[in-house]
Amino acid sequence: HYIVSKLLAKNGYHVRLFNKYNVIKDLDSPGGVHEGLEYEFLSGAKKRTGLGSKVIGMMLANIRLVQRLRQISQNGNVRYLLFSYSSYPMLLWIKGLSLMFGFKLILNVWEYHQAVVRGIRKKIDTTLFYRHGYRWVDGVIVISSFLNSIASKANPNIPIVQIPALADFDEHSINATNKNTQEKLYFLYCGGIDYKEAIDLVVTSFQLLTSTQHKLILVVNGKEEKISRFQQTIKKNQKTKASIQVLYHLPYSELLQLFRGASALLIPLMNKQSD
View 1 (tube, rainbow, N blue to C red):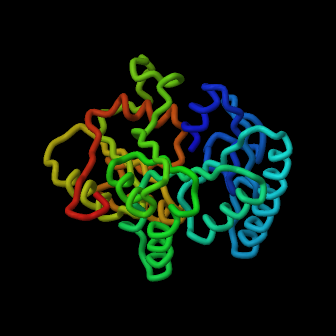
View 2: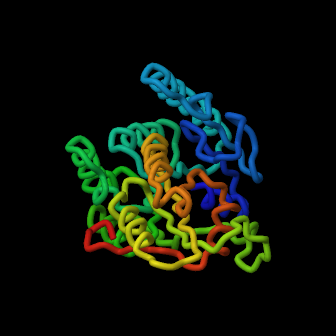
């Protein structure tokens, strides 16, 4: 969403970013301007812990979202709501707001969540989303032919734009000569913490190397508590604590530096629908 927003702003669109919590590591303020984009964390905090605090954060975020959309709708320009994949009830809520305030709703899908979720409740939610969610939006952005085919099957009349995964090369040029921030040689893996089998495969394969000067850097995303537990597992293991590093919530500049400096990018493909 963030890079798409920068691309839209560069082409003359006025973009405002709304999120419940902080999704950009180097931002301390719950609202302001970052790299030319207006943003706001609608819960009023970078992060909330505890059930009560999270409920309050959700209520505040929904109330403020209604307020902000009402304000934006008063300017009379053509407007679009770009919405990333979420739960099916949340999609219906956002669709209701788009109808209320006259926005076109565009869905951004970058992953086939139905292949990786666990638990009956989440399975039901993702099934509803992929079977019926595309009926409620005015357009879709996808990053693969596979996701394109799913959207087309669910709603043959929906406009679809297929784009590759994006990186901000204007600011972080692939030809830049920035000094590598890592002192040693390393292999790099990037993926979600919910793809635990793939991560375990990478770690196990790395440990089978009998002689190497390389470290292994794992850049993961997902729920912070899951990532923290995984970090502790790596640190407690005598075989892995010195040679494997787990990172998350990296700014784009640091992530691209890691890509440039890696000896190899590890992309394990398993015999599963998610791959």
